[in-house]
Length: 279
Image (cartoon, rainbow, N blue to C red):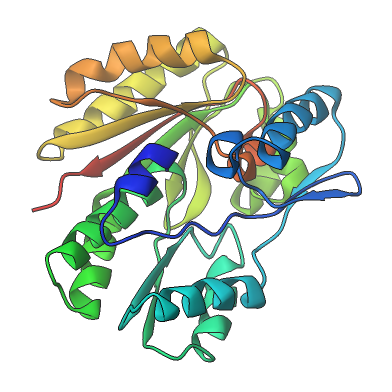
């Protein structure tokens, strides 16, 4: 979620970053914008260099203690209940850590497994925050996030599967990896897992098929919201945003992949996230 949207949400939204490990160095996972420079800017630089050089890069779930700290801070700020919306449990152990932390919290905590990641997850959080801002109950707030998640889609193209293979995020494709070495696979999220959508042989063809899938998904939504992600390829991401801009009545922002995703998708990745507008 772009920091500007995060900071503008009312009631406040707290983002708990996912740690990123480059070699033996552990980074908190915050980007330069959200961390105010310092380690965040260092992570962005070091991550791009590590991925380009093929150095080991891993991610880890936030600890239950880190999540409990966030819950207790919300409680201290006067919150009567908490809705914790996290990325897919099939991609990360964050949901499990949040459930452990919730048991020790002093206020009710509803943990939502969004089955999403990227900007689609961000939209689910913002929809939930909007309901909370209107005085919705903890169940109504969680339902808003889940409703957004049910209607969301995400498609992405990567130059190769090496980063996903190293990170173990393509379990569903493990038996196919050898046959995908010479293609530019179009991937998507289905039931919270990375799935093969199509296997075009060239990047131009992959982009054509990405556009077709995005158009199909957008046509099935009323007033769809679109966000484009990229990593180390801003001109291509801006071009993609321009191509899909006609599918939404809203501007289509380009948002750098957060480190926790960039570490697995690799340099040159492009993604489009779509979510239905809230009712």
